[in-house]
Image (cartoon, rainbow, N blue to C red; front, side, top):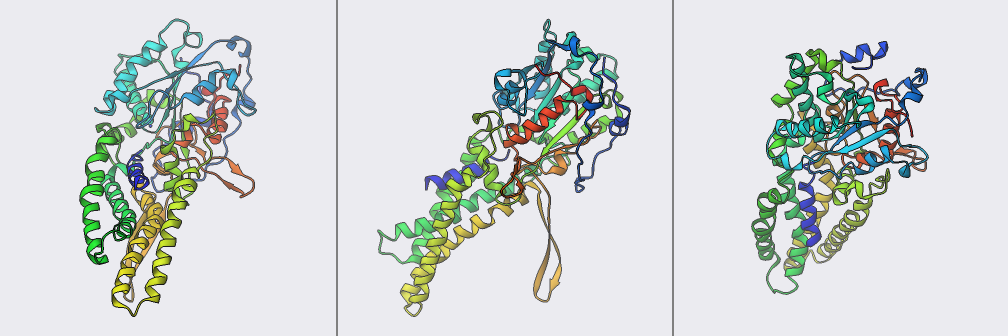
Length: 486
């Protein structure tokens, strides 16, 4: 029972962001308009920009630091980015594929400012960022425009709010590039065009309630009748009532919002799909100060097979608790929790189905075994359908009724790529980006010849980020981001 309640709780816990001139071939990207949300273009590998750059200033750059400001996402804190932040500046964490750069990492924590709006959080970050950027000797040649932000998930939306505030002030002539304190932005798995999961919070609560009912019905019905000589029908009715009133309803409507209040914090009201805030941010493409700032969006792609359990894996254990770049094992939660649970339900269902068939002609026993068979089957079916249900919640799976074929309804199913929380169509769509969106899909498994995937939380510390962050610092996603290795 404990594991079942934990599972239901975990479901709710996923409710989850002086300028150097641009190369001429990036001009068209500076003017890029929003991508259609249902259009996921094929992203080709970026040109090796750093190969054509003459690094004439290499000696001058030695030991001159630029600040990278790291912003966490929903339910995160200052430690969320700790591994890549430390690896970016500390040679002690060098790997074969990643070397430290002349970077000073500054980890922000705005978790105490999520009860307000994106503006509330961004205003807090703005004050802290400027204080850090203005400290003596902390910036590259004290040029604050060389600093930049790397923001995960909701942190990317806080950053878009920050940009909107700053570029508006610049357009009004009350802020300069230097006073802004940063000159670029990298978003990672951010719901740039909104998070459908926020539009579907009611579906999450229903899903959690269904989990409680269907997963506890079989165990309760079987265990209770071992002690009380009552008919299965009565116990089944009582059991469902007790579950609905005392466990599931309390968990879905009372305990979960309290336990995960930060997931349902008011800040999320600003970035549901089609929110007015996102429209405001998208309109920043009309501001020349906004379009002059280097910007690139990293987005994760997670295979749809077992996507819910692969995502929950990194809710169950935070990615930064793994060694640097080692948050790569998606299947631990599934292998240790879900697979054994599934086979428990399947084996009990098969057992009672066999007995129901054997005693079909004995009315009392037939009903007794039928009730248990149905109860265990309901739990098995919920586990089977949970992944597609979750995809519908996050907007990665859409159903459309197109008519009838005789007596049977015909449904068209459309599946979109996602990172398990945010669709790629949203996470890659940064209007005014100065480079193509950058795809992260885990590491390549030679044995299966497949990519392992980068889920929404995992992406902060997996092998895919190691590769893409290294290329970012190498200048492959824009010369602005080139940073010399130590």
